Image 1 (spheres, rainbow, N blue to C red):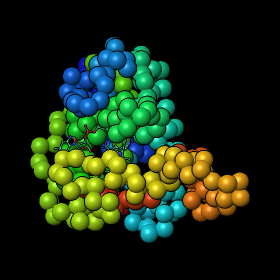
Image 2: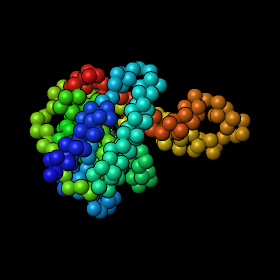
Image 3: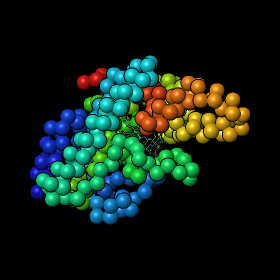
Amino acid sequence: MSVALKEKIRNYAMTLGIDDFGFAAVADYQSPQSPKIETIFPEAKSIVVACVKEMSHVESPNPQIAMNGRLDIMEYARSTNYKISRFLEKECGARAMSVPLSYPLELTPQNSRSVADVSLRHVAVAAGLGVFGRHNLVIHPRLGPRVLFMAVLTDLALPSDPQVKEDLCTHCNLCVESCPAAALDVEGQTDFGKCIKVSQPYGLAKIIGFWMKWAGKSPDEQIKMLFTKDFFMTYQASFIGFQYACFKCYSSCPVGGSCK
Ligand code: B12
C-alpha cells in the first residue's frame, strides 16, 4: 500500500520538472540543532523531499546574474512545493505543510546562527538524496552538491527511501581552499559569521552597521551616506530577500559539476 502510494506521489512530483524526489519517515530525520518536527506538526509521520539542480549561474563572476538564477529557482520552488502539498491533500487525503527553500526563518539575536525550523540538508540525507561533503553541503549521487532542497511535512505514514551509503566527497579540499571567507576551515562546521559576511555582503550585519554609523553623523554626512553604493545595494537586498554574492563552495566542487 505505502509502496503504491509513494509511487503515485513520486510520479506526480516528477512531472513538475524537479530533478529528484525522496521520502523520509519523521523518525529517521536527525538534525541535532533543529526543533523537533512534533513542535511544528504533531501528527506528521513523514517528509517528502524534492531536489532541484542549480544551473551555470553559480559560476558567474557577476553577482547579479548569479543571484538571478537563484531567484528563478526560488520562484519555481514556491509554486512547485504548493502543487506537491496540494496533491497530497487533494489526491491522497493527507494533511500537508510546506517547508520552503529558505526564508522565512525565525530571525532573533538569540538564533544568530539562523537555525531553520526544518534542516533541509538533514531531511535530504534521511530521504536518500545524498550525503554531507567536506563543504557541509549535501552531495546528490548523480547531480553533485549544486542542488537545492524543499520539503513537505505530511501525516501519511511513508517509509524512508534507502540512505546513500557511499562517501561522495573526493576530499580534494578545493571547497576549503576556494572559500573567500575561510568559513570551512574547521571540518564539519560552517562558520556562520565568516560565511554570511562574504556571501551576503548587504545583509543584516551591513544594515545594522549602516544605521549605527548614521546615528552618530551630522545631517549633511547622513545625506552623503544615503548616496553610496552600500546604501543602494542594501536597499535592493532588503526587498530581494537573502541576496547571495558567493557560490564558491558550490562551484569549486568537482563532483557532479555538469548542468545535466
Ligand atoms: C541558515 C542557512 C545558511 C546560513 C547558515 C549555515 C549553517 N551553519 O547551517 C548561511 C547564510 C551561512 C548559509 C550559507 C550557505 N547556504 Co544555506 N541555508 C541555511 C538554511 C536556511 C538553514 C540551515 C540550518 O538550519 N542550519 C543549522 C543546522 C541545521 O546546521 P548544523 O546542525 O549546525 O549542521 C552544520 C554542521 O554541523 C554540518 N553538519 C551537520 N551534520 C553533518 C554531518 C556530516 C557528515 C558533515 C560532514 C557535516 C555535518 O553541516 C551544517 C553546516 O554548518 C538552509 C535551508 C534549510 N531550511 O535547511 C539553507 C541551505 C543549507 N543553504 C544552502 C546553500 C546552497 C548555501 C550556500 C551555498 C549559499 C548560497 N550561495 O546559496 C552557503 C553554503 C555554506 C556551507 N558550505 O555550509 C542549501 C544547501 C544545499 C545542499 N546541496 O546542501 C540549503 C539546504 C538551502 C536549500 N533549500 O537547499 N546558509
